[in-house]
Amino acid sequence: MAWAKDEFGGAVLGDSRLTKRLIRLADDLSSNPTASIPIACGGWGETKAAYRLLDNEALDWRAMLEAHRPPTIGRMVGLERVLCLQDTTELDFTSQPGIVGLGRLSYERQHGMYLHPTLAVSESGVALGVLDAWMWARKPKSEADVPESLRWIEGYERVAELAAQVPSTRLVYVADREGDIRALLDRAAALGHPADYLVRARHDRVLAEGGKLRAQVESQSALGEVEFALPPAPGRTGRTVVQSLRMARVTLARCGSKTCEVTVILAREESPPAGEKPIEWLLLTHEAVETLDEACLRIAGYRRRWLVEIFFRILKSGCRVEALQLATVERLERALVVYLIIAWRILHLVTLGRDCPQLPCEVVFAPEEWQAAWLVAKRQPPPETPPTLGEMTRMVAGFGGFLGRKGDGHPGPKALWEGMLKLMACVEAFQAARNVYGVG
Image (cartoon, rainbow, N blue to C red):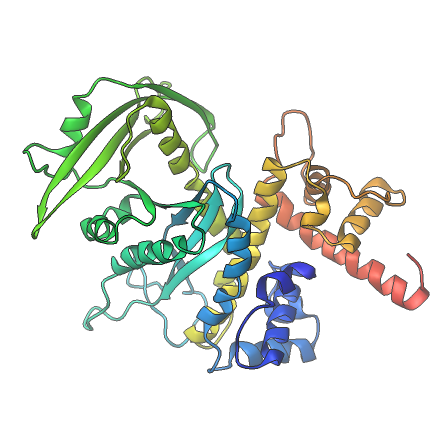
Protein backbone atom coordinates (compact mmCIF):
# COMPACT_ATOMS: atom_id res chain seq x y z
CA MET A 1 0.00 0.00 0.00
CA ALA A 2 1.24 3.49 -0.90
CA TRP A 3 0.66 4.89 2.58
CA ALA A 4 3.40 2.72 4.14
CA LYS A 5 5.95 4.01 1.64
CA ASP A 6 4.82 7.58 2.25
CA GLU A 7 5.30 7.27 6.02
CA PHE A 8 8.41 5.05 6.21
CA GLY A 9 10.09 5.58 2.83
CA GLY A 10 12.43 8.24 4.21
CA ALA A 11 13.77 6.05 7.02
CA VAL A 12 17.55 6.33 7.39
CA LEU A 13 18.44 2.91 8.74
CA GLY A 14 21.92 2.43 7.29
CA ASP A 15 20.78 0.03 4.56
CA SER A 16 18.09 0.61 1.94
CA ARG A 17 17.04 -3.04 2.26
CA LEU A 18 16.02 -2.39 5.86
CA THR A 19 13.84 0.50 4.74
CA LYS A 20 12.16 -1.68 2.12
CA ARG A 21 11.57 -4.41 4.69
CA LEU A 22 10.12 -1.87 7.14
CA ILE A 23 7.68 -0.65 4.49
CA ARG A 24 6.67 -4.23 3.71
CA LEU A 25 6.17 -5.01 7.41
CA ALA A 26 4.00 -1.92 7.90
CA ASP A 27 2.00 -2.90 4.82
CA ASP A 28 1.47 -6.47 6.07
CA LEU A 29 0.57 -5.51 9.64
CA SER A 30 -1.81 -2.74 8.56
CA SER A 31 -3.68 -5.18 6.33
CA ASN A 32 -4.55 -7.27 9.38
CA PRO A 33 -3.66 -5.30 12.54
CA THR A 34 -5.59 -7.55 14.95
CA ALA A 35 -3.71 -10.68 13.81
CA SER A 36 -0.40 -12.01 15.10
CA ILE A 37 2.73 -11.18 13.12
CA PRO A 38 2.91 -14.65 11.45
CA ILE A 39 -0.72 -14.48 10.33
CA ALA A 40 -0.43 -10.87 9.13
CA CYS A 41 2.74 -11.64 7.16
CA GLY A 42 1.03 -14.56 5.43
CA GLY A 43 3.88 -17.02 5.11
CA TRP A 44 7.02 -18.35 6.71
CA GLY A 45 9.39 -16.41 4.46
CA GLU A 46 7.79 -13.03 5.19
CA THR A 47 7.41 -13.90 8.88
CA LYS A 48 11.08 -14.82 9.17
CA ALA A 49 12.09 -11.58 7.47
CA ALA A 50 9.84 -9.58 9.82
CA TYR A 51 11.35 -11.17 12.93
CA ARG A 52 14.84 -10.63 11.54
CA LEU A 53 14.06 -6.93 11.16
CA LEU A 54 12.66 -6.62 14.68
CA ASP A 55 15.66 -8.52 16.08
CA ASN A 56 18.23 -6.27 14.39
CA GLU A 57 20.22 -4.75 17.27
CA ALA A 58 21.58 -2.00 15.02
CA LEU A 59 18.06 -0.81 14.23
CA ASP A 60 17.10 2.12 16.49
CA TRP A 61 13.35 2.48 16.96
CA ARG A 62 13.81 6.25 17.10
CA ALA A 63 15.18 6.23 13.55
CA MET A 64 12.11 4.27 12.47
CA LEU A 65 9.80 6.84 14.05
CA GLU A 66 11.84 9.74 12.67
CA ALA A 67 10.88 8.67 9.14
CA HIS A 68 7.26 9.51 9.96
CA ARG A 69 8.11 13.04 11.10
CA PRO A 70 8.60 14.77 7.69
CA PRO A 71 5.22 13.64 6.29
CA THR A 72 3.63 14.65 9.60
CA ILE A 73 5.20 18.11 9.35
CA GLY A 74 3.93 18.30 5.78
CA ARG A 75 0.39 17.83 7.06
CA MET A 76 0.96 20.56 9.66
CA VAL A 77 2.19 23.23 7.23
CA GLY A 78 -0.43 25.85 6.46
CA LEU A 79 -2.44 25.31 9.65
CA GLU A 80 -2.73 28.23 12.05
CA ARG A 81 -2.42 26.09 15.18
CA VAL A 82 -1.60 22.42 15.83
CA LEU A 83 -2.31 20.68 19.12
CA CYS A 84 0.47 18.38 20.36
CA LEU A 85 -1.29 15.94 22.68
CA GLN A 86 0.76 14.01 25.22
CA ASP A 87 -0.26 11.22 27.55
CA THR A 88 1.03 7.96 29.04
CA THR A 89 -0.43 4.47 28.83
CA GLU A 90 0.51 1.14 30.37
CA LEU A 91 1.20 -1.84 28.13
CA ASP A 92 0.50 -4.97 30.16
CA PHE A 93 2.42 -8.07 29.04
CA THR A 94 1.72 -10.13 32.17
CA SER A 95 0.07 -12.80 30.02
CA GLN A 96 3.22 -12.97 27.85
CA PRO A 97 5.86 -14.55 30.15
CA GLY A 98 9.52 -14.59 29.34
CA ILE A 99 9.91 -11.18 27.65
CA VAL A 100 13.32 -9.91 28.77
CA GLY A 101 13.59 -6.30 29.94
CA LEU A 102 10.04 -5.56 31.10
CA GLY A 103 9.35 -3.89 34.44
CA ARG A 104 6.69 -3.51 37.07
CA LEU A 105 3.45 -1.67 36.37
CA SER A 106 0.97 -0.03 38.75
CA TYR A 107 0.57 -3.36 40.54
CA GLU A 108 3.63 -5.35 41.54
CA ARG A 109 2.33 -8.59 40.06
CA GLN A 110 1.92 -7.03 36.63
CA HIS A 111 4.81 -6.57 34.27
CA GLY A 112 5.06 -4.57 31.10
CA MET A 113 6.22 -1.17 29.88
CA TYR A 114 5.04 2.40 29.41
CA LEU A 115 4.39 4.40 26.27
CA HIS A 116 4.23 8.21 26.12
CA PRO A 117 3.63 9.54 22.58
CA THR A 118 3.02 13.02 21.21
CA LEU A 119 0.07 13.01 18.81
CA ALA A 120 -0.28 16.00 16.46
CA VAL A 121 -3.89 17.05 15.88
CA SER A 122 -5.42 19.98 13.99
CA GLU A 123 -7.74 22.36 15.83
CA SER A 124 -10.66 20.77 13.97
CA GLY A 125 -9.64 17.34 15.29
CA VAL A 126 -7.81 15.66 12.39
CA ALA A 127 -4.98 13.36 13.56
CA LEU A 128 -1.85 14.47 11.67
CA GLY A 129 0.83 12.09 12.95
CA VAL A 130 3.01 10.91 15.83
CA LEU A 131 5.72 13.47 16.51
CA ASP A 132 7.61 11.78 19.30
CA ALA A 133 7.46 8.96 21.84
CA TRP A 134 8.96 7.79 25.07
CA MET A 135 9.07 4.05 25.78
CA TRP A 136 10.45 2.63 28.99
CA ALA A 137 10.21 -0.15 31.56
CA ARG A 138 10.47 0.57 35.26
CA LYS A 139 13.39 -0.78 37.20
CA PRO A 140 12.87 -2.72 40.45
CA LYS A 141 12.12 -0.50 43.44
CA SER A 142 15.55 -1.32 44.89
CA GLU A 143 17.30 0.33 41.91
CA ALA A 144 17.56 4.02 41.06
CA ASP A 145 15.43 5.00 38.08
CA VAL A 146 15.11 8.05 35.85
CA PRO A 147 12.34 10.37 37.16
CA GLU A 148 9.31 9.73 34.98
CA SER A 149 8.32 13.40 35.18
CA LEU A 150 11.17 14.12 32.74
CA ARG A 151 9.10 12.75 29.87
CA TRP A 152 6.70 15.69 30.17
CA ILE A 153 9.48 18.27 30.25
CA GLU A 154 11.42 16.66 27.38
CA GLY A 155 8.13 16.32 25.51
CA TYR A 156 7.67 20.08 25.64
CA GLU A 157 11.30 20.65 24.62
CA ARG A 158 10.88 18.51 21.51
CA VAL A 159 7.68 20.32 20.56
CA ALA A 160 9.55 23.61 21.07
CA GLU A 161 12.37 22.41 18.79
CA LEU A 162 9.84 21.45 16.12
CA ALA A 163 8.30 24.94 16.24
CA ALA A 164 11.29 26.32 14.33
CA GLN A 165 10.50 23.99 11.39
CA VAL A 166 6.92 25.27 11.04
CA PRO A 167 7.27 29.01 11.80
CA SER A 168 3.86 29.88 10.34
CA THR A 169 2.08 27.35 12.57
CA ARG A 170 1.70 27.84 16.32
CA LEU A 171 2.21 24.61 18.26
CA VAL A 172 0.26 24.01 21.47
CA TYR A 173 1.50 21.42 23.98
CA VAL A 174 -1.59 19.85 25.62
CA ALA A 175 -1.38 17.68 28.74
CA ASP A 176 -3.66 16.30 31.42
CA ARG A 177 -3.12 16.67 35.17
CA GLU A 178 -0.02 14.49 35.21
CA GLY A 179 1.71 17.19 33.18
CA ASP A 180 1.12 19.86 35.84
CA ILE A 181 4.80 20.09 36.78
CA ARG A 182 6.34 23.36 37.88
CA ALA A 183 9.65 22.47 36.23
CA LEU A 184 7.81 22.21 32.90
CA LEU A 185 6.27 25.67 33.27
CA ASP A 186 9.62 27.14 34.23
CA ARG A 187 11.41 25.41 31.35
CA ALA A 188 8.88 26.78 28.85
CA ALA A 189 9.46 30.28 30.23
CA ALA A 190 13.25 29.86 30.09
CA LEU A 191 13.02 28.89 26.40
CA GLY A 192 10.85 31.93 25.67
CA HIS A 193 7.68 29.93 24.99
CA PRO A 194 8.50 28.84 21.39
CA ALA A 195 5.42 26.62 21.76
CA ASP A 196 2.31 27.36 23.80
CA TYR A 197 1.16 25.03 26.56
CA LEU A 198 -2.28 24.10 27.84
CA VAL A 199 -2.11 21.94 30.96
CA ARG A 200 -4.90 20.78 33.24
CA ALA A 201 -3.98 21.76 36.80
CA ARG A 202 -3.60 19.12 39.47
CA HIS A 203 -2.09 21.27 42.20
CA ASP A 204 -3.75 24.21 43.95
CA ARG A 205 -0.56 26.23 43.85
CA VAL A 206 0.42 29.12 46.14
CA LEU A 207 0.49 32.56 44.51
CA ALA A 208 3.28 35.11 44.80
CA GLU A 209 0.89 37.67 46.28
CA GLY A 210 -0.50 35.12 48.75
CA GLY A 211 -3.55 32.89 48.58
CA LYS A 212 -4.20 29.89 46.34
CA LEU A 213 -4.78 29.41 42.64
CA ARG A 214 -8.30 27.99 42.77
CA ALA A 215 -9.65 30.57 45.23
CA GLN A 216 -8.29 33.37 43.08
CA VAL A 217 -10.00 32.24 39.89
CA GLU A 218 -13.23 31.31 41.69
CA SER A 219 -13.46 34.87 42.98
CA GLN A 220 -13.67 36.24 39.43
CA SER A 221 -16.93 37.03 37.66
CA ALA A 222 -17.95 34.58 34.96
CA LEU A 223 -16.93 35.59 31.43
CA GLY A 224 -19.85 33.64 30.00
CA GLU A 225 -20.69 30.06 29.07
CA VAL A 226 -19.52 27.42 26.62
CA GLU A 227 -21.72 24.58 25.38
CA PHE A 228 -20.61 21.33 23.72
CA ALA A 229 -21.65 17.72 23.21
CA LEU A 230 -19.90 15.31 25.58
CA PRO A 231 -19.36 12.02 23.71
CA PRO A 232 -20.32 8.74 25.39
CA ALA A 233 -17.57 6.79 27.13
CA PRO A 234 -17.35 3.61 29.23
CA GLY A 235 -19.61 4.19 32.24
CA ARG A 236 -20.89 7.50 30.86
CA THR A 237 -23.68 8.43 28.49
CA GLY A 238 -23.30 11.22 25.98
CA ARG A 239 -24.98 14.54 26.81
CA THR A 240 -24.86 18.28 26.29
CA VAL A 241 -22.61 20.15 28.72
CA VAL A 242 -22.86 23.85 29.58
CA GLN A 243 -19.90 25.24 31.51
CA SER A 244 -19.40 28.68 33.04
CA LEU A 245 -15.96 30.18 32.39
CA ARG A 246 -13.82 32.19 34.80
CA MET A 247 -10.32 33.46 34.19
CA ALA A 248 -7.48 35.09 36.13
CA ARG A 249 -3.92 36.14 35.34
CA VAL A 250 -1.74 35.17 38.30
CA THR A 251 1.89 34.85 39.34
CA LEU A 252 2.85 31.56 40.96
CA ALA A 253 5.04 31.75 44.06
CA ARG A 254 8.78 31.42 43.71
CA CYS A 255 10.26 28.01 42.99
CA GLY A 256 13.92 28.45 43.74
CA SER A 257 14.58 31.94 42.40
CA LYS A 258 11.82 31.94 39.79
CA THR A 259 8.25 33.14 39.71
CA CYS A 260 5.94 32.08 36.90
CA GLU A 261 3.10 34.08 35.36
CA VAL A 262 0.18 32.05 33.98
CA THR A 263 -3.43 32.41 32.96
CA VAL A 264 -5.79 30.06 34.79
CA ILE A 265 -9.17 29.18 33.28
CA LEU A 266 -11.88 27.50 35.33
CA ALA A 267 -14.54 25.72 33.23
CA ARG A 268 -17.28 24.39 35.51
CA GLU A 269 -20.61 22.71 34.82
CA GLU A 270 -22.92 24.43 37.30
CA SER A 271 -26.09 22.37 36.77
CA PRO A 272 -25.32 18.81 35.67
CA PRO A 273 -28.19 16.34 35.16
CA ALA A 274 -29.33 14.47 38.27
CA GLY A 275 -26.92 11.68 39.11
CA GLU A 276 -24.18 12.98 36.79
CA LYS A 277 -20.80 14.19 38.01
CA PRO A 278 -20.20 17.81 36.94
CA ILE A 279 -17.56 18.34 34.26
CA GLU A 280 -14.93 20.74 35.61
CA TRP A 281 -11.50 21.66 34.27
CA LEU A 282 -8.87 23.99 35.71
CA LEU A 283 -6.49 24.86 32.88
CA LEU A 284 -3.14 26.65 32.84
CA THR A 285 -1.57 28.49 29.90
CA HIS A 286 1.18 31.08 29.65
CA GLU A 287 -0.85 32.98 27.04
CA ALA A 288 -2.81 36.06 27.98
CA VAL A 289 -6.53 35.24 27.73
CA GLU A 290 -8.89 38.19 28.04
CA THR A 291 -12.13 37.50 26.17
CA LEU A 292 -14.80 34.80 26.19
CA ASP A 293 -13.87 33.76 22.65
CA GLU A 294 -10.22 33.35 23.63
CA ALA A 295 -11.20 31.25 26.64
CA CYS A 296 -13.53 29.11 24.49
CA LEU A 297 -10.67 28.48 22.06
CA ARG A 298 -8.58 27.00 24.91
CA ILE A 299 -11.50 24.86 26.09
CA ALA A 300 -11.96 23.53 22.56
CA GLY A 301 -8.23 22.75 22.40
CA TYR A 302 -8.30 20.86 25.67
CA ARG A 303 -11.36 18.89 24.57
CA ARG A 304 -9.34 17.50 21.65
CA ARG A 305 -7.20 15.69 24.22
CA TRP A 306 -9.73 12.83 24.20
CA LEU A 307 -8.35 11.85 20.78
CA VAL A 308 -5.22 10.47 22.42
CA GLU A 309 -7.45 8.16 24.49
CA ILE A 310 -9.05 6.88 21.29
CA PHE A 311 -5.56 6.51 19.84
CA PHE A 312 -4.58 4.27 22.77
CA ARG A 313 -7.76 2.24 22.36
CA ILE A 314 -6.99 1.64 18.69
CA LEU A 315 -3.44 0.63 19.60
CA LYS A 316 -4.55 -1.85 22.27
CA SER A 317 -7.87 -3.17 20.97
CA GLY A 318 -7.49 -2.62 17.24
CA CYS A 319 -3.81 -3.56 16.92
CA ARG A 320 -3.70 -5.82 20.01
CA VAL A 321 -0.14 -4.80 20.83
CA GLU A 322 -0.36 -6.35 24.32
CA ALA A 323 -0.63 -9.77 22.64
CA LEU A 324 2.75 -9.43 20.88
CA GLN A 325 4.96 -12.44 21.56
CA LEU A 326 8.47 -11.08 21.21
CA ALA A 327 11.42 -12.16 23.29
CA THR A 328 12.87 -8.80 24.36
CA VAL A 329 11.72 -5.28 25.12
CA GLU A 330 13.94 -4.00 22.30
CA ARG A 331 11.99 -6.08 19.77
CA LEU A 332 8.77 -4.79 21.29
CA GLU A 333 9.91 -1.20 20.87
CA ARG A 334 10.59 -1.69 17.16
CA ALA A 335 7.25 -3.41 16.64
CA LEU A 336 5.43 -0.73 18.62
CA VAL A 337 6.74 2.02 16.33
CA VAL A 338 5.11 0.30 13.36
CA TYR A 339 1.85 -0.17 15.25
CA LEU A 340 1.93 3.46 16.44
CA ILE A 341 1.82 4.62 12.83
CA ILE A 342 -0.84 2.04 11.91
CA ALA A 343 -3.00 3.23 14.83
CA TRP A 344 -2.44 6.83 13.74
CA ARG A 345 -3.55 6.00 10.19
CA ILE A 346 -6.81 4.47 11.42
CA LEU A 347 -7.47 7.55 13.56
CA HIS A 348 -6.50 9.78 10.63
CA LEU A 349 -9.08 8.09 8.40
CA VAL A 350 -11.77 8.49 11.06
CA THR A 351 -11.05 12.16 11.76
CA LEU A 352 -10.28 13.25 8.21
CA GLY A 353 -13.42 11.56 6.86
CA ARG A 354 -15.47 13.38 9.48
CA ASP A 355 -13.78 16.77 9.04
CA CYS A 356 -13.19 16.80 5.27
CA PRO A 357 -15.82 14.48 3.74
CA GLN A 358 -15.82 16.25 0.36
CA LEU A 359 -12.16 15.56 -0.40
CA PRO A 360 -11.54 12.96 -3.13
CA CYS A 361 -10.88 9.64 -1.46
CA GLU A 362 -7.57 9.21 -3.33
CA VAL A 363 -5.93 11.59 -0.86
CA VAL A 364 -5.94 8.55 1.48
CA PHE A 365 -6.94 5.44 -0.47
CA ALA A 366 -5.10 3.88 -3.41
CA PRO A 367 -7.12 3.32 -6.62
CA GLU A 368 -7.24 -0.45 -6.11
CA GLU A 369 -8.64 0.09 -2.61
CA TRP A 370 -11.52 2.41 -3.45
CA GLN A 371 -12.35 0.45 -6.60
CA ALA A 372 -12.52 -2.82 -4.66
CA ALA A 373 -14.69 -1.19 -2.00
CA TRP A 374 -17.05 0.15 -4.67
CA LEU A 375 -17.37 -3.24 -6.39
CA VAL A 376 -18.22 -5.02 -3.15
CA ALA A 377 -20.47 -2.35 -1.63
CA LYS A 378 -22.30 -1.18 -4.79
CA ARG A 379 -22.23 -4.41 -6.85
CA GLN A 380 -21.44 -2.40 -9.96
CA PRO A 381 -18.32 -1.24 -11.85
CA PRO A 382 -16.50 1.68 -10.18
CA PRO A 383 -16.96 5.14 -11.69
CA GLU A 384 -14.21 7.03 -13.49
CA THR A 385 -14.28 9.75 -10.82
CA PRO A 386 -13.31 8.54 -7.33
CA PRO A 387 -15.98 8.90 -4.63
CA THR A 388 -15.56 11.46 -1.88
CA LEU A 389 -13.61 10.62 1.23
CA GLY A 390 -16.79 10.74 3.30
CA GLU A 391 -18.54 8.23 1.04
CA MET A 392 -15.52 5.94 0.95
CA THR A 393 -15.13 6.05 4.72
CA ARG A 394 -18.76 5.04 5.21
CA MET A 395 -18.41 2.22 2.68
CA VAL A 396 -15.39 0.82 4.51
CA ALA A 397 -17.05 1.26 7.91
CA GLY A 398 -20.06 -0.58 6.50
CA PHE A 399 -17.83 -3.63 6.00
CA GLY A 400 -17.12 -3.37 9.74
CA GLY A 401 -20.77 -3.26 10.81
CA PHE A 402 -21.52 0.46 10.59
CA LEU A 403 -25.19 0.77 9.56
CA GLY A 404 -25.13 4.39 8.42
CA ARG A 405 -28.59 5.21 9.68
CA LYS A 406 -29.74 8.81 10.01
CA GLY A 407 -28.92 9.02 13.73
CA ASP A 408 -25.70 6.99 13.65
CA GLY A 409 -23.38 9.97 13.18
CA HIS A 410 -19.88 9.43 11.84
CA PRO A 411 -18.20 5.99 11.71
CA GLY A 412 -16.02 5.20 14.70
CA PRO A 413 -12.55 3.63 14.80
CA LYS A 414 -13.76 0.10 15.61
CA ALA A 415 -16.04 -0.12 12.57
CA LEU A 416 -13.35 1.41 10.40
CA TRP A 417 -10.47 -0.85 11.42
CA GLU A 418 -12.68 -3.96 11.09
CA GLY A 419 -13.85 -2.66 7.73
CA MET A 420 -10.26 -2.13 6.64
CA LEU A 421 -9.49 -5.79 7.36
CA LYS A 422 -12.26 -6.90 5.01
CA LEU A 423 -11.28 -4.32 2.41
CA MET A 424 -7.67 -5.55 2.36
CA ALA A 425 -8.91 -9.12 1.86
CA CYS A 426 -11.01 -7.91 -1.09
CA VAL A 427 -8.06 -6.03 -2.59
CA GLU A 428 -5.86 -9.12 -2.37
CA ALA A 429 -8.56 -11.26 -3.97
CA PHE A 430 -9.05 -8.83 -6.86
CA GLN A 431 -5.32 -8.50 -7.40
CA ALA A 432 -4.92 -12.28 -7.44
CA ALA A 433 -7.77 -12.61 -9.96
CA ARG A 434 -6.18 -9.96 -12.15
CA ASN A 435 -2.78 -11.66 -12.04
CA VAL A 436 -4.07 -15.18 -12.65
CA TYR A 437 -7.02 -14.64 -14.95
CA GLY A 438 -6.37 -11.18 -16.33
CA VAL A 439 -9.73 -9.89 -15.09
CA GLY A 440 -10.52 -6.56 -13.48
